[in-house]
Length: 408
Image (cartoon, rainbow, N blue to C red):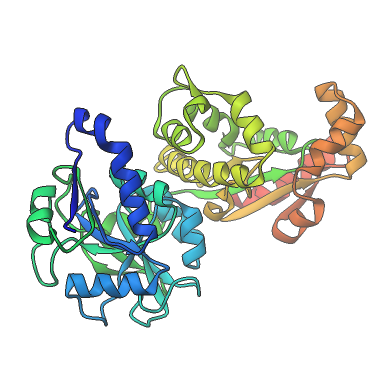
């Protein structure tokens, strides 16, 4: 049987064929077949990365030397965390530049077969932004090992027609999404040890380097803590000292109260009911995530990407020496990865319960239930510089002044 080619260039074609095309392509990947798909740079040909036989078939079809590793093509950070070891700088880069034409090389985990990495200890991760790839990756639910859709040494295909002319009969399914946006391969950066440019592509190396070196960025100080511990009071004291304070909850509400990339991504992951009237359907999403730990983790990972991007946009070049990030869910959303320091306000549970009841008008039992869903006191004490919020306001004010004096 020859290659099954799906033309999906026009809205009419997508409306009529997209569902069947995605199901066929995703099933083909899971069954060990080869699929050609568009990215924003060039067309790729890929297979199920965890299937060594499929990977070997891809090498043979591509006529690619076995010593040249493949890139894992992924759609979210959860997949990346299962494949590679991610540190703070990696999370920042991925938040700012992906989905998009950046590939990063990292230490691999054992879940990645050696045949994908040509036996090496590292793996390259790629997060294409093309909507057809994103839809295919989510539908397949597996990491995709891929390379450019051409024979080794040939010219990379920049549209579906060119890909079909080369690989018709070689691959099992081809998704033709028209011309690529960049027609230039992704920039590849190694983050093993000192950052190093391996291939200049669509994203300038200088842009990546500026982020890694935090050029034009103030120091970022995270402020977090359990409900009722006194975090808001500490934030107000910091603001009174003259330190700029960015309310991360307010930024998140802005990102999800009008059409945005963040809101669109939430809709793709949680379904159409998650977004109504161009705004986040908060009751629906709240019900989903608080009854499903995996859904909550997915929302936090997604939020981290867009929050990091927006926070960097707001503070870069602001002229301040340091900025305080007021973030109750600093660790849940992985924003701790962008911080130079993290402060946490702590108080005994009875004090927190009393304050929550007075502030929100709920019962002590409900206050304790709320606290039980948050990180415990030991979690913050192991990871943060602690400010004691259980005493007097003057005592907390003094601690905030002492902790932040060097940042002013």
